[in-house]
Image (cartoon, rainbow, N blue to C red; front, side, top):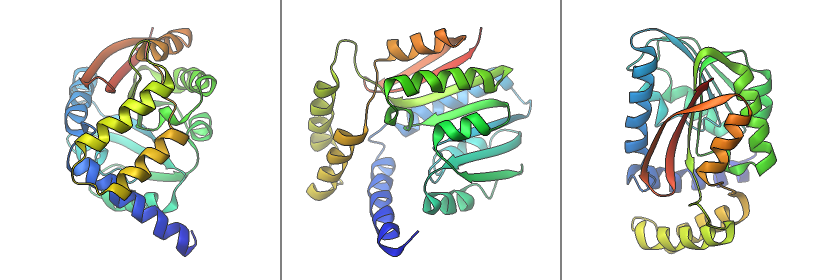
Length: 231
């Protein structure tokens, strides 16, 4: 990564770190819900993890320390994020593999896994690409595996434009630790890159791929965990 790109990355990542630390996107509640689902499915049994769009793995890595893992494989497009992830995952006792790849390419190339985890990344895909994601995930899950989707969703009947407007208004009112330029940057990013679906649409795509919903956690109307298994 050249220096301007690296500087841009760390500026964006610093802003996101503030959002996570203040729990504005409900990472704590969603992480607790993920742990409950993993414990219910695997207990003390070891399992393998494929983490798509892993970023720096700062919120997922500590959660995984409470489990016995066969392997962890993470993928992200940012080399800088992967470098941070390598540090954050260093306490795991299992083999750790980090790959620079986009979400769908890695899902297509990866081996079968017991857990496929995607956090705040699926909403970047267009609707048809999300359907492709679920088809691939169904193929790459082991028979007793779990697909865990932590993401933003639109409310039922809420248009994408209405979501963008409401979410930006909400973050401007809520995310008090950010300055105005940081809020502007987040709103600019989501207006141009975020395409969340209603949760019903994601469930329908998953069902068409042969998956069924196991659990839903919704600490806030837009921020949710959807957990799927094979039918």
